[in-house]
Amino acid sequence: MPKTSRSLPQALRHYLANPLALGYLGVVLAVCLWVAVVTFSAASSGDASFAGVWAILATAPTSLLFTFAGPIGLIGIPIGAVVQAFALGALYRHVTERRTHGTANGVSSA
Image (tube, rainbow, N blue to C red):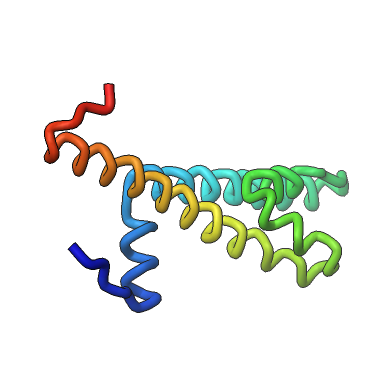
């Protein structure tokens, strides 16, 4: 069966709407919320916090490309999250579609 080309929104939906990609985005969101809470509570007490490093590490290695851009480099966190989720979604689709096609042809992957 020939593969049809997808538009960008269709490709994003295809690779981001699966349990692995959505789970990863949920973890990144939880880390970013935790960083926001810790940062605001540390700001009220006058203490500095390195909690923001966890948001960068959760979306590494893509977000590390933006770390030298100064404060504007924070845009690397959502970009890194989407790129990593897209890669995880592509891996998930590849494994599940390979397993489905393998069992449909009578070939077991076990």
